[in-house]
Structures are given as structure tokens and as C-alpha cells.
Length: 282
Image 1 (tube, rainbow, N blue to C red):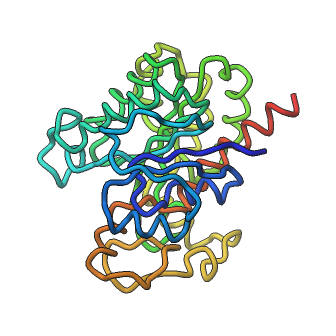
Image 2: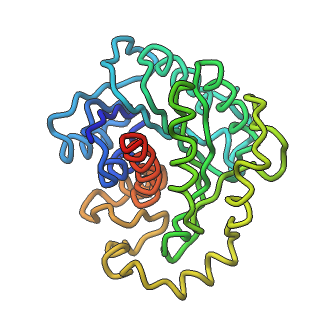
């Protein structure tokens, strides 16, 4: 199975790296405005086309997956709370425009959990208006055995035409207790789509794992070798395991603070892969 990937707000490539590790890929293009991050991308994806600015590029090659973690400064609880109307997080509008122009089969959007009330419903509503169903999957690095929590939300979106074939497969794929569908238990309907999820995801909600449970589970896990999975643990704050240490310290800390943990993105990619492989067998 081969799916092509395009990445927006790429940073140093943690999101697309995780999707590649899940068996998806290759990456065809990336877009990142920061010069230091573009140098890191150029080293690890030397043959990939790179764009500088999402606001000034309009000829995007077609890809099967568009992924990206748009800026969180106006969404995070640490910011001023301007939300999607803010100067930085408002770049979601460009993300939305590009999805509409490229029409990928799948979309993966990542952002902070702490400010989900400022973005999650609106983003899913925009995806629905573009013709996509979506699911919001909450994954923390701590869920996967990391020595810190770092919760994030990944929105998986896919075309209406794929819905019936993929829904049952994806429900099976996310049965791991370390993955949670976000926002399903509090509402009868699926956000802007109006589809009832009370029965569809009842079992998933019962298996939802809270923060304290995740910490206890990390102590008991035997299926992941921590010395391998979290081998690179830099001795500075705002770390992302799996990313090399040998880069400029100041720039590195800033880039890591904005980076998607590849292991979390890999889990999202495995959900997509499992759904597609299940579809192929039916």
C-alpha cells in the first residue's frame, strides 16, 4: 500500500515521520516558513519539494494525505485565547483552503488538547463543509510509555464515499486502550455532522483511558521496550524523543516545542493503514 503525503506547517517533520513509520508515504511535499526547520527537513527528506509560505503558494500537487499541525499560540491555555481569529492560529483558514484545492483522500490535523474548545468543533465543521467525515483522536506521549504526558488531539478526516467501508475497520483499529476518541460521550451527535455516536462508539468510550490510568499502565507495559521506543531522551526541556540531539541548542528547543511526537503520529497512521487494509480485504 502506497499513499502520497503532503505536509503543512511541517516544523521538523515529526508528523510525516510518524505516518511514514506506520507504512504510509512517501512524502511528496512540505511547507514550512522557518529557515532552521527547513534545513532539518532538507537533510532528512532531500528529494521532497518544499514550499515556504502557505499563504502565497497556490499550485499544490495532488497527494492522498494532507497532514499538519497549524500554529497553536492562539489556542493553547498558555496563550491569550484569541482562538481561530488570532493571527497565528487563524492560519487554519489557509489549511482549509489548501484541502479544498487538493482534495486529498485523507486529512490529519494536529493541535493542543488544552485549548480544544477554541478549535476542535470549528475545524471539524469546516472539514464537514468540504465533504469530509472526521474523528478526533486524543493521544498523549504518556499513553505510549513516555516519561511525561504531552496530550494532543489528532483529527482524522476522510471522504463521505469511504465512510461505510472504513468506519467498522477504524473502530477495530482504535480498540487499543491507549487511544481515545475525543468528545463523544458528552454529546448525542457527532459535532457538525449530526450523526449519533451513542451506539457506534459506546464501547470505545467505555475503554477510554484517563491520565491516572495511563500512568499506572505505563508501569505494567511489556509490549514496548522503553530502551528502544524512547531511546533518545535529550537533557533539555520541551523534548521530543526520537529526534536527533545534534542541532543548535536554542533553535532545537524551539523546534522541539512545536514538534509532533513521531510515535503518536505513527499510531494515527496505523489507524489509517488498518482501515485501508481492511477495506481491501472486503
